[in-house]
Length: 182
Image (cartoon, rainbow, N blue to C red; front, side, top):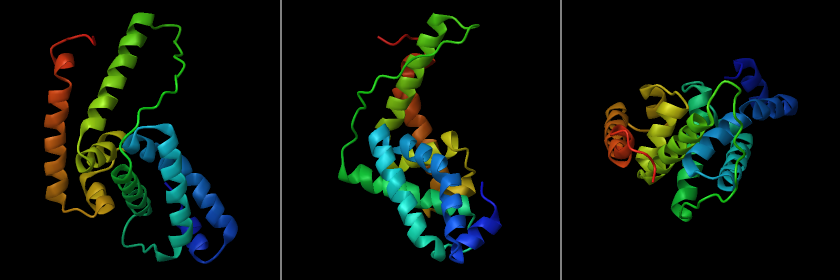
């Protein structure tokens, strides 16, 4: 994710290194926030808050943990706090659909509906299950990295993922049976 030398320079007070470091992680921070909070505006707020916290707390980072898990813990905690303060909102922004030359319009539309329904199903999960699903399947974290990021025992992470998958199966029952969004 980030070169260790850049992290050390930022910790040593090199302002340019710190700005470079923040620029390198800002997309990752935003993407994680978006997957957790579910809408663009809240994700931008959470990402900005996380970057500010990283900026002010870079000196507290210890190499005992991987840098990405340290960053992930900050982002996830901010998003969970934001989720507790505010009920989730639905974004009213319309996103343009761009079709590839070699795909059918019907396939693109069904794919878009499936993605929306999966997103809605993930949003229905309890916040602790949602966090582990986002980290595992959308951010591709290992179980150990998730445990470090969320400060949870490894078996708890496995249990949360198991229960979250069961809940997602229930929520997405129509797709499992070949159903169509109605």
